[in-house]
Image 1 (tube, helix red, strand yellow):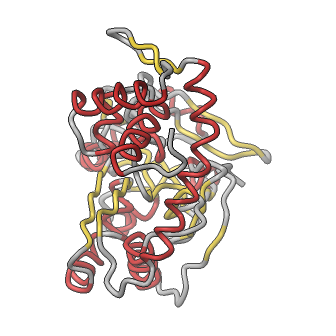
Image 2: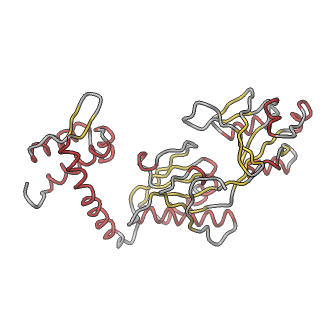
Length: 320
C-alpha cells in the first residue's frame, strides 16, 4: 500500500474500523451513515487492496481474523489521534454545531433539561439535541450517547460526573385512607404484610426491592402488592388513590405530603444517597456542541437548586 492514503483508501479503512470495533455490519453502517451493502463493498475493497482477509463473516456473526485484529490494534490509536486533532481545529469555529445524543432519567429531564430547551435552541441553532428519556441504565458508549443524566449510584467509574443537585432520599408513603383501612407499618419488615405499589427497572424481570438503612448498612425488603409499574409517575398516582403503599423519591411527593394527600412512613430507615449527575465519557477534546449542552444543563441545575455553581465531582457509583 502507498505510504499516503487516498480518499477512497481512507474511506475503506474507516469502514473496516467501524466493523472491527462493533463486529456488526448493521451497527457499523448506522455509525457511518451508509447502507450495510455499501459498507460491505468498502470492506471487501479494502481487503482486496491489502491482499489479506481481515474479517470472517457468516450469516449471523462477524469476527476478526488474526491479521484483522493486528491491524485494528495498530490503526485505532492513529485514527483516534487524527480525530482529536481535527476536533481541536474545529474548536476555533465560533458557532457549535452537530448532534448531541443524550440519555436521561425522566424526572431528571423534567428538572434540568426541559427548562433550558428554549434558550438553548435560540442560542445554538446549529445544534440538534437527540434526547432519549428512559429510566433504564444503558451503556453510553455502546449506545452511541454523548452524555446522560442519572443518579450517582449507577454511574460507571470511568465517567466524568457533574453534580446537578443534592443527595436524594426514597421514602415509603401512603394515603390517609389506606392507613385507616390497613394500619401503619412500624418497621420496614412490616411492609411484607401490606399492599405495596411496586416498580420495575426497565430491562429487569424482577421488581425493585425497596432499600432501607439501619444499623450502619443498607438492607432490602422484597415487598408484595397488587400493582407493578415501569413508570414511577403512574405508581405515584396509584398510591394517591389509596391502592397501596408507594416508595418514592422524597422531592416527588413533597407536594402531596404538604397537602395531606400522602403520609410519610418509616422515615427513620430512609437515608440519603447520591443524587442526580450529568455524566459523559472522559475525553481529551470535547466537541463544542457537547460543551454548550453541559454548560446549559449546569445553569439550569443551579437555578433549580438555588446554587451559584453545581460543581464538578467524581462519583464512584456507590451509596455512602
